[in-house]
Every structure is written in C-alpha cells, then in structure tokens.
Image 1 (cartoon, rainbow, N blue to C red):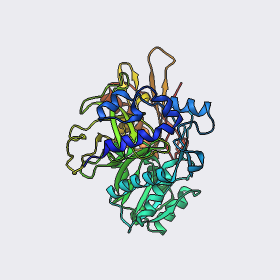
Image 2 (cartoon, one colour; image 1 turned 120 degrees about the vertical axis):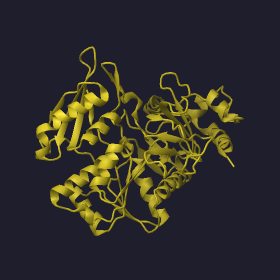
Image 3 (cartoon, rainbow, N blue to C red; image 1 turned 30 degrees about the vertical axis):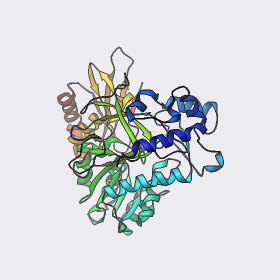
Image 4 (cartoon, helix red, strand yellow; image 1 turned 90 degrees about the vertical axis):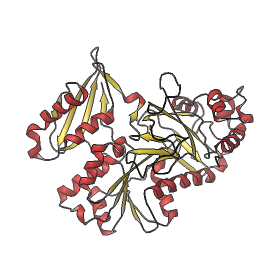
Length: 419
C-alpha cells in the first residue's frame, strides 16, 4: 500500500508551527492537506539553498525552518560549504531515527549484515553522513571502527589488523589509500575488504572509476549511494544494475525537472533532482532543488518495477554532477563526471586538477595530471589529450605535475577551479 500521500499530509499539517514554511506556503492552502501528488507539485513552490542561507543569515544561528521549540532538538550538523555558504541543520531524536532507518536501507541493499566489520575512513567532522552511516551500522549489529584522526598509513594498517570487511569513504580517498598502500609496500590482497561503500562524489557510478577501484582493491565490490546534510540519506545502488541509484521512495518524493524551466523531464531525460522529505519533520524540506544533475532511468519509474524488483525511482549513472558544474567549451557541454571517466579510462593518473578559464569570450579547459608512476609520464599527456579529443571533440591542453604535488582529499574532492 502506498502511504506517500498520508505521510505528506501529516507533514504539511505539522508545518503550521514552522515559521519558514508557514510563511512560504501562506495562501497556497497546502497546510490543510492535498488530494494528490500532482496537486502538491502544482501548488508547492520550490525551496532553494539560497533561501535557506538567507534565512539563516537573517535569523542566526539556525534560521526559522524549525517545526518545534529549540529544546526538542538534540543534533546539529553542517553542510560542507563546497557549493556556497554552509548551512547548519538541527534534528530531533525522531528525525534522527528516520535518517538511521534510511541508512539501514543503504547498508542492507549493499549486503551488509551483523557479521560485517566496517571501517569509516572519515574525520568525523560536522557533516551529517559520517555520523548517520556509523550509527545505523552499529544499530544493525555491525562491528564499527572510526578512522578519524588517523593518517592514511595508520588507517590502512587498521583495516588489515582489524580485518575490516567494508570500507566507507569517498571514491577519491579509496584511490588515495590504494596509492599509499603501493608506496608503503602494503599488499591490499591481504585485506578482507569485500565492499567499498563510497559516496560524496560521482565517482562511485563512473564505470572507469569503478573498474580502477576494483583493480586496486582485489575482490571488493563497489557500492555507490548518496545523500545530503539537508535531506539525509537519499539513495542506494541497484543490486541488478551497477551504477544505477534508487531513491528511497518511502522516505522521499523525488522529481526530476528541467533546471531552466522547472518542468518535469520525461523518462530517460536529464535534469535536476528535486526532493521532499517525508519524515524529517523537525527540519523539513519541500520540493528542494538539490542542484544534483541526474538522468531518469528508462527501465524504472515510480509506476514500474526494476529488474531488481524495486519500484523506487531509478537514476542512471547515479549523481552525474552539479547542475551548475556543466560548462560549455566551444559549443560542447562538458560535465566533470565525463572528464573523470576519460582520465580513469586512460589510466596512469594518481591525481588531477581542471582549470576553467573564462577570461576570453569562450571558456577553455586545462587539465593538470600527476602520473601514478614515473614510467607512465613520457606519453601520458599525449594519450590523455587524444582521449579528450576523441570523446569530447575538443582539444584540451594536458600538463604533467611532479609526483606528490597535487592535493589529496579525504572528503569531497575539489578538483575544478575557475578563473
């Protein structure tokens, strides 16, 4: 039985005491409930991050998107600020439990059981995902290890010594750990890690990045998923179709819209993911424009069934990037995920950076790469340049950097710069 509409009606009724949404929805009639999801989408305005930032600046430190008195809230987390000003986000115990339930879905879909030993290679700062992933795994009965405050070498040694079966981190950091292991003479074939649970970047659903991770971590399956501090855990990877993410439909109303018009895109179309959470009542979001670029699956929708048996909305290729990350270079649409796919497919790259120059009339790209090994350096730039031209029909200058000179990332990688 689909209980989405009753959940939505209950959420809307609770928002009468939420100053942010009581004002935003005034005159829409939504606080009295809706008869259908189509009516909700037609009458409810989008919520944007810019609105939330402005609200917190005008009403510091938490803003007015709070349904209950401050005394009801027990957790405070913060966005990374990688796409603008950071947001502080409060949760009640009930909202926190709702997010742990969602994370349990992510773990279970990855095949996680109480027998697993999970190593979390994060700093455990103010960002939400680390904490919810850790607590939900603990609730499942897993043996969990916090890798905060450790060097990469110490983390690798702990992964081996503690016989971890699952490693949770970003795709970039999993690649970095493998590079450190090679440098230190640590044989990852001795590892018992059979699952790399990765998020925070598109890499987990990029075929070439997945293949590289599987090569570096022998015997490990790559498992992608995603979430945001503002909305919590959102999706899990399809068991039948690697690289496809399913949005947890019991927890979210998901829409994919044209970023320019706000209108729904058809099946197979690409657009911006818009989310309404159905259980985070203490700090809700209605029709939140996530800024994530996604492509609707042609095999799965909320009205049909995926080969894995799920009716949850499918996103081909996972999170493809940010809507505002796409740039036009001499008439060609270029996405960060496409650039990473080319770099990982060519191989031989330890780390890279992309500089976008818009000082001229047309934007230009320059890619700087750090070779993974000295013997790959002589023709690496030429091979990459040829691959870019073949795949993107663009001539992209490729510059070689000295080993160890490009920055490494533990959390979200920030490889693209604009000038």
